[in-house]
Image (cartoon, rainbow, N blue to C red; front, top):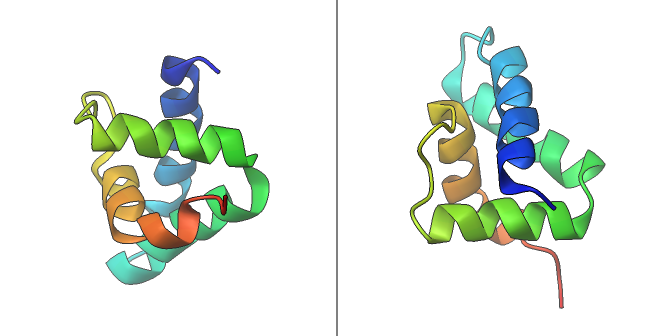
Amino acid sequence: MDGKKLVAMANQIAAFFAAEPDRKVAVDGVAMHLKRFWEPRMRREILAQVERGEVAGMDALLVEALRGRRAELMPKG
């Protein structure tokens, strides 16, 4: 899967939750959306991008969700 497309889609999710005044609720919302609606391979790829430090172009809320909820987002196996 194209990493740039994943980032663009994930940034749209983060933009939606950015209106939430409670930062923790916003981070949780981004993480839960990714967990519920993204295929495991998509989550695996975007998490790998963060691990490699490839966060340029990623919304700060997205990065916070990916780093803070990594264990929960990482597909099993």
